[in-house]
Image (cartoon, rainbow, N blue to C red):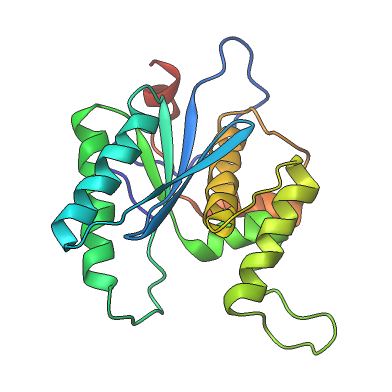
Length: 206
């Protein structure tokens, strides 16, 4: 979890007053990127025939959503994964981060396990019937349901899981800034303490 801006292990701020900063959550991917702002979700789908055309479609689509942002929360890599597209996805994430850097927009990268803890209280949720650790689509469905139950945002369609993940990231960013969108228990809130947030003044000053 890193940022190109000044790093500081800072707790969530007290409830803030004044203008609400525009925070965007991004679940970046080569195929479908989930995007979220307060009260809404969207996605960018790349359909290009080449890797370069997919990069370009993603970067242009993401830029449309982040160009006026005050702060962006990006999902980072799951280091335990070893998949064939990891190199391209890593490049995609870095291009997004570089674009934010050029725009002087503060950002932070959040590990998927930390996002899970904020969403459901644990990085290893289990099936209540079998006691086995959830994986794949059932795990994604649990996060999507948590977003619906906690924030009243029900994501639909083929990007529903990507959008739900992005909404959790958005909520983490707003909570850290002292503007939580819902009351979350300490089992969830503790996730904020594991993120290397930028200097809060970088965000508030925008």
